[in-house]
Length: 142
Image (cartoon, rainbow, N blue to C red; front, side):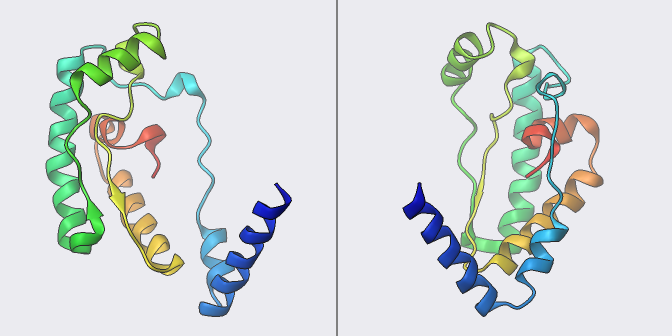
């Protein structure tokens, strides 16, 4: 634990040296706290959730690829058998609890890139419909 803290502290120092606005950017990213009971899909029908996730993958996936090119990794949707297993094992059969059918990764070489990515995603979430928001992001965040 102490060794991890030392590495973490070194990374913070390095980021502050690379970009003097590092702390300002970090402070602008709000902490997202949601009650687990609020983190549900609008539908209890897995077919509907997958249909919504496909739409989100097509739209936000394209936007990410258009903006970040190869730095946007957009895999296929979670395998249905994996989702069904997770629903049974983790959510005790409650289909509206699954949140990670669509996933993506954005690779950045600086914290400024992470911050810009956050702002882009935050704007998308703010301007999307509730059903797209739930299908897209765990808890409505990044």
